[in-house]
Length: 265
Image (cartoon, rainbow, N blue to C red; front, side, top):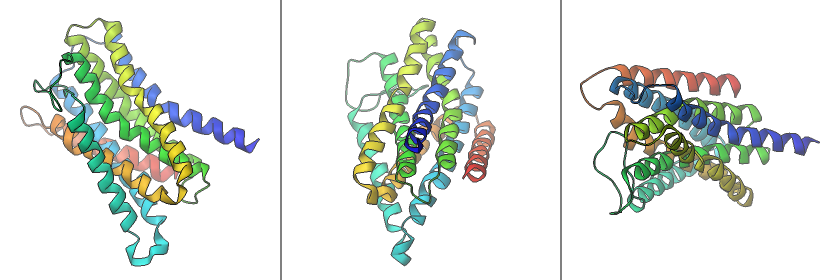
């Protein structure tokens, strides 16, 4: 009975961020064809704030606490995993052709893929570490790790779902502006989020095989998420004429995720 309840909790937690992406992508049916530059910057800042707070309270701090038996070297798994996460996203950035929203220059290897496909791939890359973060939290919960509870894992899922809502809109609306139908723009937004539950399940399966490596996996997810923040979201929230809107929404997202994590953890 307890096992079934845990599985239901995990299933719901894995799907919650994906639902956030779907709801955000659905904005294409109700909003005008394009998002204003100011709104895009606000949404990017909000997403960045949530991801930074989640990386610290949900991932890095638990990783360090789980390594306290190492004494003064308790930081080692967190630092090593963090750097592997950074390098993993850096490698994907160079191996997968993609185009960031608001940019005219594609990144990665030369490709004949269309603009809209590469825009979806850019957000898909962004979503991989988020799925991994949720997966590693629920892997810790399954392993009955003292530092990770069902409520702390759920807090991370809810936080990522909240930031996925504007993220879904950020991809579906520009796809619509590129000339795609509302249905195709919505589908593009949804597809960009499919990697999250897939990444979460794969991470859970991997973590169950290497439970002692959990601190490394937690910090790996944190490194990957922070790579996305610095490489993609911060430039997006700072584009164009100077404005403090991105900074203010970063602080709002950070505060919200911090409250969620501390209150639920």
